[in-house]
Image (tube, rainbow, N blue to C red):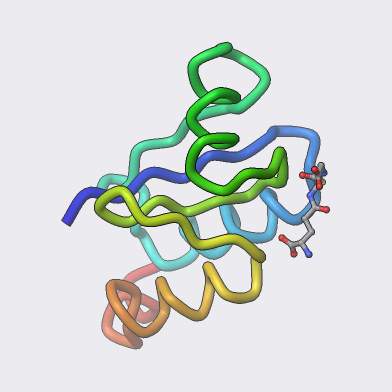
Length: 87
Ligand SMILES: N[C@@H](CCC(=O)N[C@@H](CS)C(=O)NCC(=O)O)C(=O)O
C-alpha cells in the first residue's frame, strides 16, 4: 500500500496528523510532502481533491481529507494498539 501525507508545516490540522503518526511509530510507512514546497504537490492536491485543503492522506492514489478522518483511517488500517505500545 502506498501512503503519502500532503501537509503544511504551519497548519495545526496537519500537525495533529503528524503527531499521531509520530506517536504510533508510522513515519517509515508514509511519504511526506509539504504542499508549499513544490508546485507539483499543489497541482496534485488540486487534481486529487479539487481543493487546496491540507492535510490530505493519499492511499494508493485515493485522497482522504479531514484530519479526524485521516487519523481514524490510520488507526484502523495501519496504526493499531500494538504500535501505540511501542511509541
Ligand atoms: N477540518 C479540516 C481543516 C483543515 C484546514 O483548515 N486546513 C487549512 C490549513 S491549516 C487549509 O488547508 N486551508 C486552505 C483550504 O482549506 O483550502 C481538518 O481537520 O483537516
